[in-house]
Image (tube, rainbow, N blue to C red; front, side, top):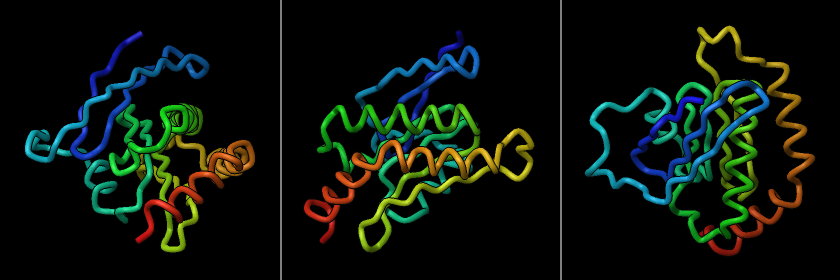
Length: 155
């Protein structure tokens, strides 16, 4: 199994590698890089995630095999962060593309998927079904995160 070393401009990073679709190894890195020590060249995905709404909670990419956690939410319990990591990584390992979990203006969680236009292996139908499954299975977690955002993060 190949281990990938990941770096990210603005979020904590988890790298993962896949031996096959059923075997995903996740390794957590507790350090986050500051903007001054970031690599000069960012991938298109990293730029897109950075440019999007600043209420991004986390994101995972099948293209770069990276998980991004917004450091503004480091006060969340470790178990919640790990649950988000596992859910996002397994999602992208299953259907491909990029999964972004973000808060809208009212504080509701949105699960957004995207993919490269030339990615013919991305499963569009599977991604919709997987989002619905994730919303159903993680309902309590998502409701707790929305409450956390309303109480502690919304200004």
